[in-house]
Amino acid sequence: MKKTRVLSCLIAAAVLFVMLGSVVFLAVEAGHDCSGHGCPVCAQLEACEEALQTLALAAGAALPAAGAAAWLLGPPR
Image 1: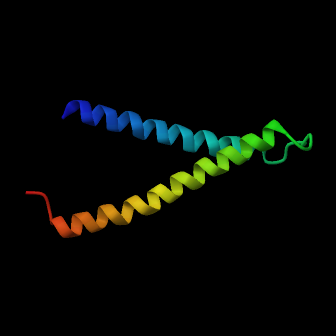
Image 2: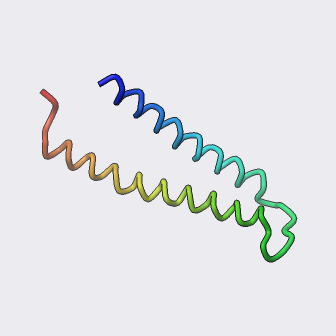
């Protein structure tokens, strides 16, 4: 049980790190001087946006599923 809790905390910390890192990078580099086609900053901006969209989609799917499971299973005994 303790290993599961530690692993869950590590995964949550990793997700939080990715989210915060992506948001900070997007905020800092939003007005960069683009070098045109193949700009590495633009490619990284797109990767950060995709990561945030993927996390939002996963949260949007997981929260209703967890709520439905809690409602169907009832309170813990």
